[in-house]
Image 1 (cartoon, rainbow, N blue to C red):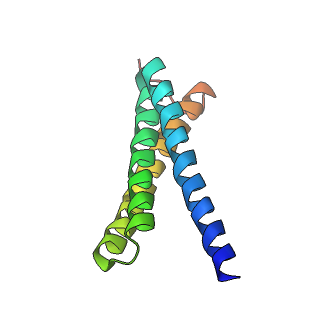
Image 2 (tube, one colour):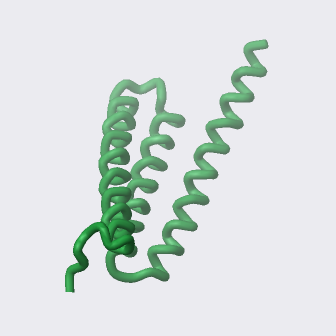
Length: 105
């Protein structure tokens, strides 16, 4: 029974890392194609994904080491901050498009 949980955990961890990497590739493709404020927003999303992928990788491969577990936790805080800035930037773009916020000329 323990082996089944270990296998499921391993598959879930690998799937998580793969999906994060795939998200990173797609986000990089968007950054490559867009300009101006949308570009800035997606650069924050891309940086957030890189940090999260690094944090998850450290957490999965070095989870028994306290130092790496702490670094992984700190990287997740950085991920949260970068994601918030990206969402905030995207929110400003949407508010400008809706006319809720003044457009800068």
